[in-house]
Image 1 (tube, helix red, strand yellow):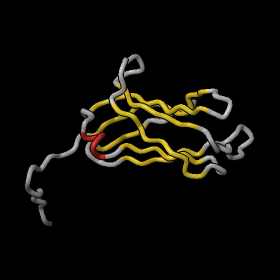
Image 2 (cartoon, rainbow, N blue to C red; image 1 turned 120 degrees about the horizontal axis):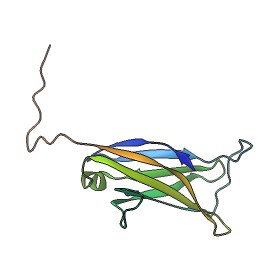
Image 3 (cartoon, rainbow, N blue to C red; image 1 turned 180 degrees about the vertical axis):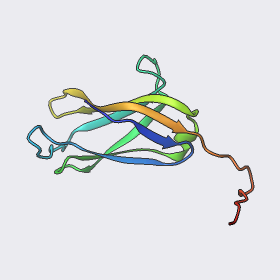
Image 4 (cartoon, rainbow, N blue to C red; image 1 turned 90 degrees about the vertical axis):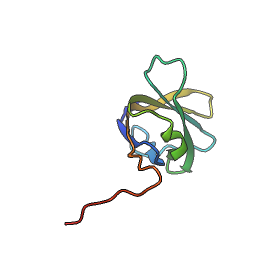
Length: 120
């Protein structure tokens, strides 16, 4: 499994991609593979705080996309979480392929008005 820490802005869409390569450096052909991912408060949390949306971008070149929309990121409290992405291959073997820490960066809430920015 690859460890990669990520930061997500609360209230914003998050989009990322993952390139899967074999040990010899060639892309993994991922036709009919299934992917899933979750964000949790800790690795020991019974429930997920959010589910990542995973999808195949390019099955021949082993590219997988994962997103979390603004509505879901808005529901996450600022702070640190963990995430894991799993892959199920055509032989029904499930592997954790990516994981790490997630830092939810708080959003500034301006209410119904826009912020007043200083001019230089």
